[in-house]
View 1 (cartoon, rainbow, N blue to C red):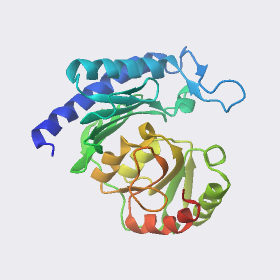
View 2: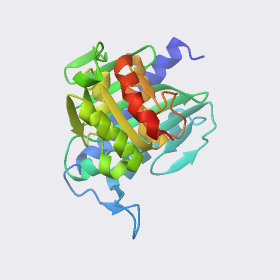
View 3: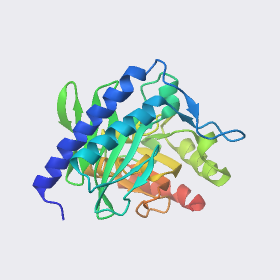
View 4: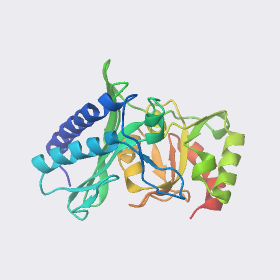
Length: 270
């Protein structure tokens, strides 16, 4: 088990990683970001930029210098000691499409596994100067205004909820899309295209439910300690804990909202 002192040390290092990542990314935002397509011919466009690669390289360099025995799993450069006791899970720019479009809805996701469990994570938005950071013990927002605790919104129902997903037409298959449309019809307000920034808004009490499918580990692991530390829940579409490989994910602030959503989601759970 991690001591409070060790966790505080790693928390401070996580903030340092966010600052280094932001320094690599921000000069390229709304500039010449060196866009490439990872998918290749005949497949759906999968953008990657010099900012993605540069930020992950900067994060990996700091981890290697400070904690050479730690493992790293990153979207851009793969796995290094993935079975180590401590493993950092990185997505330098979650929402590269938003980044390419000049929209400040992309985030940097940095999570830490300890003995195969996510114990510390952050969702950073450098344009806004925000770092949402958490452990199971609590979550907070670091911003230009200072630091403030994060707490999900509770006491709601699905019919009064604000819900979100990234791209229902592009990310859901037929059965998943049917489940999403059922949720959309029931909810009060729906937002699309926010990627992991929507997860941060669940922790902040502004969004009540986010559902996604086809996620990789680096798309979700960093958010789990933030959401749970703010009092929220992260499950798969059956209501079980999210596995190490991501997949179908539901993020909610209120148990009642999640339970209502799972009625629809379980029908297309994989």
